[in-house]
Image 1 (tube, rainbow, N blue to C red):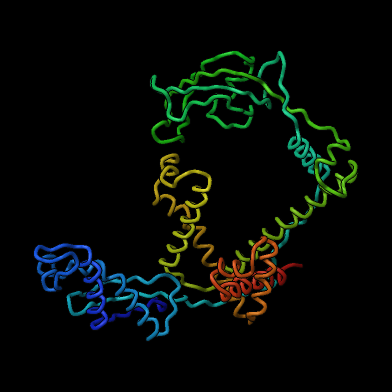
Image 2: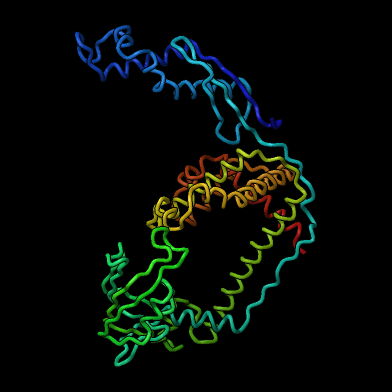
Length: 417
């Protein structure tokens, strides 16, 4: 057993009897026993009917919380992940619980300054400026109907389509007036290519095959799509004129020269930010090689579960349930867990590294400094200082976040030539 793993066994007697009695009163209020009004049966009669064991399940959670608080108070341990608890014995007079608590592993900080990590030089080319201006023109482009033409690469075709597999309609495989940009690769291979050359009003059948890495029940299957093109639209790019410059919304852009200067500044800023992030990652990676820490498997698994919860939340915000994700990708929860393990391990190790740097640098922040930081964030996000502190989980968590960011600044600055 690692030296940061502790086991504590605790026995509750009086507290357990009180918890059982409270559970009895709650459960008894909802039952009717012959000869007694609802909720009025004496305890011995209730137990004769249902048994003492009927109170255990509804009582054990409260007992676990009461005992856990006593363990933490009596032993002054600080868990880094939720404790594991086992019920070792239970009856009407007492319950015994064994807690396995994992605290911070021992961390030995190695060299983290002058690591000879190189930062990428940042340069904006004329080609990149031209590409960004074209991107802006495409963003503000008008869509106009293509008269007497056929669908071509880059066009947007307004289509109806119906899909069929084994002669049966494909679930969620039909749509009317769908705007499909040719070249977007929104559909399975062959679909967009099959529409190229069609005219407005034309109908066509496309005999295709689902990819082998598609949804499990459709992988490699033949599919028939009946397609009708209603309209063909093409982009009309704006000229670099006063109207276009006004649409961009930049007060300091009045002509093409101003635009090129603005685009270059923004690209420079973006690339510098990207280079800084990449440099910090390289510093973290190099410094972590000098860090000595034996991380418990349970801590890694807790980080994996946190990452999986975040991933499921992001999917849900996009309208996709995690169960649907597994079905669509042909994977399982175990697969995702395994996939995330390397990143979770790296994150945990980096966290211990940065915490160790913060300790080495004696980084501390007062309540006033943390509140000021919360005020600044509140202004940026258009909310209140109190809401920021609440979202963080308290002022101490704001201080922790400030320590971590300052430690990363020191790591980056001490390695930048």
